[in-house]
Image (cartoon, rainbow, N blue to C red; front, side, top):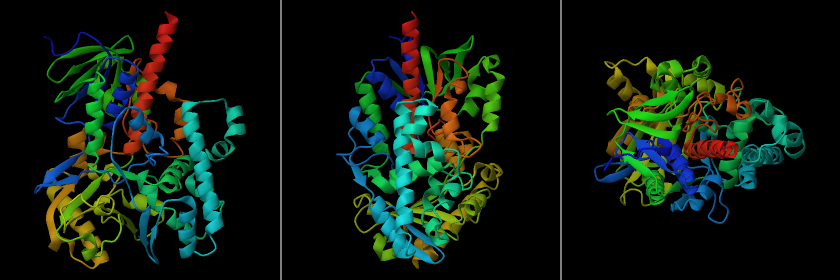
Length: 510
């Protein structure tokens, strides 16, 4: 019996969240799907690992677009509709903001959040709530327009706030609310989850982020992010998807401008009507298309014109005391010497010292995630990719440990407890770790940067122009919806929808 079928409807390259979302959606419509994953397990960075007998979350801080069981948002509803049963735990807060002159924990709920900001900066409640309501209106428009596109004339009537703010940066829109500097800074911490300073970040992105996280709160799976990928893979196989692990796709086969299959590193040629790739277009167009003569010049121009967003550096520790005993009192802490997002973004260009730290204590969201009497605490920086590209093999260990010690020392000073004295297990994840494990281009976890020059609204309007090779679609962090685990699910679904729409159009032409 042959290992692979003679032909598939769709081959999906990559068994992380985006690829598995594509596979689930296609299988739900009766399509014959093959998923090829280079690792021995699904999930990519949606994973966990074991150290000292303790399972540790590898990457997930919080999941957006889930929603409560009786009021699901789009990602949570997708999991439910696909029969992917995940036990979601609601994160107890939005974040603790720590910057000069401010120490405050803020919570989800538009009115509650606005009141808590007003408690720090009196007299701002109405303005902050008005801004958050604007975010929510734009959020609703984005969700509707992603499913039901419409003409610009109809958009202006039905989605006035979306249209009027789409061409402006986050800073430009916030400035119209005449908020004091400190109130603006309290609205800023989540910027790191999209990776652009406010002067460059399209307001549309900020609005969706704030409406989702602040309006509905965030969630984590009880059994870590690997619960998502394992259950997605299990459900996909139950729906008839063939998933093969340790199968590295080396080439995407193209003839006359159309993809028709792949070749694995071990030499298997596998054929399909469509290919969905989780690999970045940068990698696909520069080294994966066979023959290389099938790569149009505009594909190279497109990837060269786009700026890569952020990569990741994390120190994950299992500590020998409960969190409160070490003065760790919040699930999520955003700590910076300033909350000027443009200054912080520029600081991420080098190799430190880093001035903006994102800290997570998973025990406050999942009390049983570590043995009793211990806690899990991580410190994360999301550097720009260019700085870490300069690190040589010879200096890698020294740079890694220098940066790790800096962020640990900074948080130790903050808590008044030397965290290194309490370490049971410690893992350092660098951009090189991400690149090696996920094969992500330059270790980038956030795809292409959200900027006013490369705006998500414009990308949505020109999406068809980015289908450069027929029957080849892209999913993953680099696709239109951008970064984060929730958007990766959305990107995977979008790629599958594009394939299904193309199949339907071809069938109608017969």
